[in-house]
Length: 144
Image (cartoon, rainbow, N blue to C red; front, top):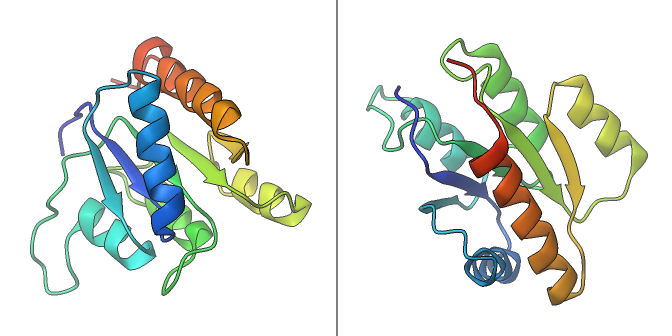
């Protein structure tokens, strides 16, 4: 897999996904955003289907990963990313509404790069999206 400038957004809630897309547009983050609606779809995009079909998505610049996902949880997706040599260094930002300490601890235990609680207010969400985009897309230097 080669490194691209896309962002993989793993979010099952349509309203939260739309809010994320609007926030990135308002923050003028123009990177292509590919959305997975659950953990299974995220794993298929990154690694291919169980039948062996190749992944549709080149390795993204960053994964924005919700924790509470249907079929396969965000923590399970994170574990899969970290155990595969092709993606083990891929930046993964947990972007979730969960403020639970156990969720934050699980994310960092499995080597999430960052844990961001989604702000409820749109203006604060736009500010958080701008900061995420600037850091992970512009400032961060990925591994070679």
